Image 1 (tube, rainbow, N blue to C red):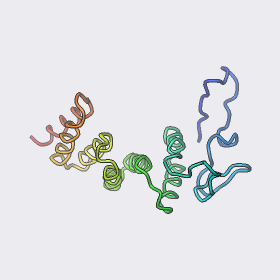
Image 2: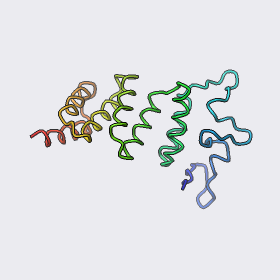
Image 3: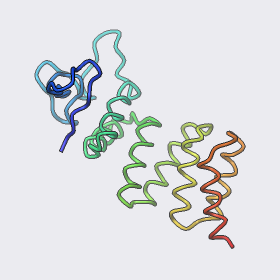
Image 4: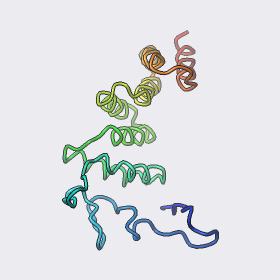
Length: 168
């Protein structure tokens, strides 16, 4: 079930627009609507980039609407073309972890971290995945590394505290 997005310009009580039929949100990979070129295989017009980063907003919309199947289809299509980016890996890892596939999510977070080693969010997610796998000492080391990059982060403190509980 897809929930319509609330648009700021829509008056209260009026029907919410369907973003897919309006062309604002593409259909899942493999389908094309009339007048809309939304497959990654489609050549972009001159001056318009077909880079996977340009589609991060679409992934975000699918993710916050909990349309995980569309997210995964879009990311898998990018991976088949060799166009995977850090954000796509992060989203796929979050979905995998929510589905209980912790080891696979850890691997994806680590790939995203290799693409951008200074991204603290990726580092924290690697630590959280290690914690969920019961690797508390390794998770603590990752969180301490992240703490060197950013101070005063309550998530780091919480995860470190949880790790210390299990290490006693």
